[in-house]
Length: 201
Image (cartoon, rainbow, N blue to C red; front, side, top):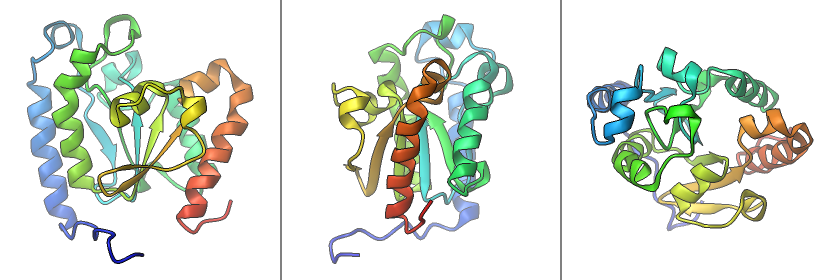
């Protein structure tokens, strides 16, 4: 580590859990997006280890997530679980959340104002968990977090910075379900990340 790397937050786990719980309660009552707050079944806050070194950031909840109130529980979530297992990780090791905490009707792409309305909650989660790494799953996550207009193909294979965290961009598991050939690219991206963590796959 270099002299200028800021140290990780020393906040105790129980304090992080309580702060996330308070933020999650605020999210559950949020009505900033009139359409989404009326059409959602449940808000989908985030799940995982409040002290995770890796935070996975997706786009928005789908139908399964909206029903269960947990991110990445549908087919894309099952694939994400397999990706984690291949990296010698469990869901309980990482933290998972989305750009939006409510499902857009018909799974449409989040609108810029919706992402802006939800940004405070995302930044709150990142601040509390204080991960060393953030993995942007898909272009919506990458473009929103990094304020970049580049495609995932151009963003892959290098680290970006977001505050203290190193950011890796890769394809969304839902994209892999439609384009299985891209799985090898995601595997390369995960190996790149894990190598930086000192884990060889």
